[in-house]
Image 1 (cartoon, rainbow over the protein chains, first blue to last red):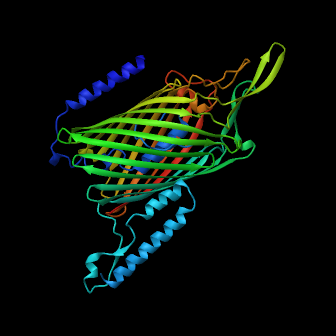
Image 2 (spheres, chains in turn yellow, cyan):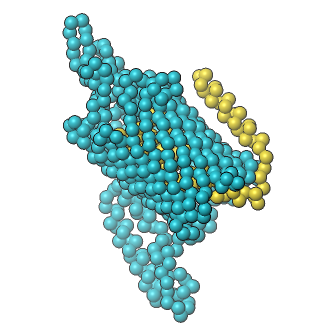
Image 3 (cartoon, rainbow over the protein chains, first blue to last red):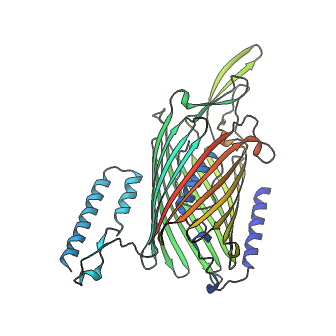
Length: 73
Length: 420
């Protein structure tokens, strides 16, 4: 219960912090539009990595929903 | 319509129909994926402007600008003659009309080698016994997924369908995701729901055919911090019910009772449900003067099996010139054990819920990686990365499971990306 309360507090703090950020005009977003600045630009790579870790570690998640499982050994 | 164009279009239709007829027979995930792929308008046809001119028609792949396709191959090998995996993936992402985007991917997993199946304490302390002693494992998994995304001004809505099939496991999953841009597109809110209906079977027990059903939820925010910096935070919840046992795994324990000792075998039995939280925060910052991009990630994971895990990842991507880039990265993972993890059982009767699977133990993992990326042309890029993955009990924050046996693996990951 304490862990869950801490998580909620951290998430609310993070979201509140993000909401206060300064605006960047569209013309200033050239660097942000580059492929290497995209999270999971190469989705196939992210998926392969996630699946490898999920088959060797007990933790998973954080990225997507609707992905299938596997009986990984 | 020009006669040659009409003939080409008819031939393309015929080929597509023939392909669909062939693929309709095996009812597998891969066949379904290929059927979907066959519906794509990517058959080479003469472009329409040539139909009106006297110039000879030139066959052109007509994936529209903005489309990308690629291939990736992962080679994974554990030391000590354990598992070896080769996994090729083909993928495609293309606009199909105004405001619509289609993504497809197909994966083949070829797994061979020996897997730990029994943990025995007969020699005095618990050790893993590999399946290789009685015959190595070979398995093949095919998987595919389709996603369709529609843009509505500053918002997107997408649906996904995934399928995965192997000898003893089948999974069908579906998801719906939406993103909302606001704050003059400086902030993106992401919402997602998903479900997965899986079937668990066993190659050693023909009577096993059990279900495992999972629902997933995602809430995420991506924020532009300044012209060079992005941050994203995602919270995912996964709630599953059904069969979580490993039908191949056994715990063999020598139990002493006074002057008597007996060898006992215990099946792997896990709870019939699992509820997980994962909270992932990612940060990217471009350093224009250094021509570099730094990435930092942290994920906290917790579930009702008692597992708590921390994952930290950092990387530095360096642009050398217009052709070459390189990247170095380091990943650290630390996990606290499930509350039913027991490498050995010391008294009878044994617990009802118990597992000796090392993946549920307390341990830490470290993975340094290096990658080279080469731009072969304006459209084509090639990358190759290598990483060394290692698990060790005492690498967990605060110490790990005493009987944890280290794991070492090498991963080579090569990808080719073509942008139209």
